[in-house]
Image (spheres, rainbow, N blue to C red):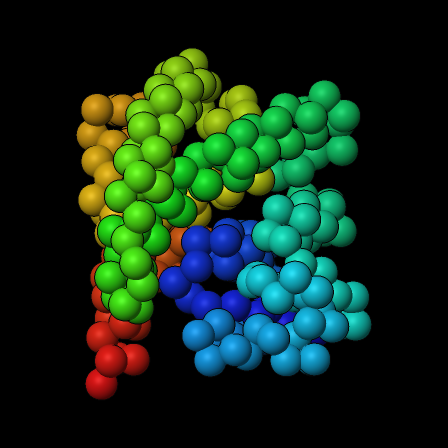
Amino acid sequence: MIKLYGMGVSFNVSKVRYCLNLLNLNYDWVETNLMAGENQTPEFLSISPTGKIPAVDIDGFKLFESNAIIRYLAAVNNSSIYPLDPKKMAVIDAWMDYVSIHVAHAMGRVLFNRIFAPMTNQKVDPESLRVGLEFLDKYFPVLEKQLAKNIFLAGREFSLADINLLAVLDPCELAQINIDRFPWLKKWRAGLKSQPFYQKCYKDYTEFVQETMSAKAR
């Protein structure tokens, strides 16, 4: 039995859900409210010692960090989205790291300052927002160049690198980040958002977040 702990609005959690859906794995969803401190209970910290989401409990095997989770899921299920060939695996890892370390961090700055800080009455940091947008302007062209010469991010085959980037880009519309000037990136994204593994989570991320926040405000 797989238990996935997280919040639906988290793109790192969505990443794991996409992978589970793609691999046709059943799982129990455990909504974990960070604002209420549910990520700081002894039970949760026994699964994720950092107190962060997502986290999974797979028949007693406890794991945290989204990239580690999806790598494990793909490997244990012998999936082609994370092949055993060392060179292919290294290329996938390189693009996963690039997206997680650089793109996701910049996206997080923008998303927090434009959406979540005002929503939760926290202080907006204009400098952090400026830096996030500046970095995205540097990182998106790299992705565009890669997708202009490849069908998918790590080459001609769909992989965990694509799942990772797809999830990280989910907040674009919500955070008012326009990728229209990157046609290859936009086309790649639109194609994957139409796939069943994505649609099982939500039809549209922005609408999902707005509906979720509206429901919690009632």
